[in-house]
Length: 172
Image 1 (cartoon, helix red, strand yellow):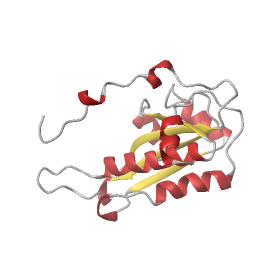
Image 2 (cartoon, rainbow, N blue to C red; image 1 turned 90 degrees about the vertical axis):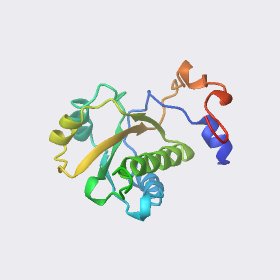
Image 3 (cartoon, rainbow, N blue to C red; image 1 turned 120 degrees about the horizontal axis):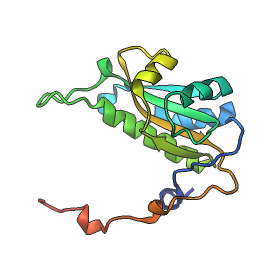
Image 4 (spheres, one colour; image 1 turned 90 degrees about the horizontal axis):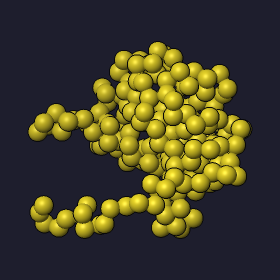
């Protein structure tokens, strides 16, 4: 799909068909995340694929924003593998995880898979339900699946601030 069309048409899907994604489809989405750029190419991302009824039931214990999706991917980062900005100690890994998540979200839409980026989840419960090691930080959740026939963007999707309120040249 043409990139401008892809980014204009993609929206957060909150209504899905009741069928898990096929492995070939998951692999295409994961490939997009795998080749995403990361700080110093450290690749600190760790992606947990949830694609069974049992896994999705466990996910429902961690968030109310599951939208009954049949599949989800939890994007974590390994805090021990992050590039660190020496001036203030800031970790690049949260940004890396966001880039990986964005790549996967756009790749999913490109092949007909809807997704919704969820930040409203309990990371402690996530850690408990899915045996996530302490060095991995749950950063983003993509709930996903094939959009149902009545899936549509929320009204807020079409509201953007004027570009001159968010873009500045040379100084603020």
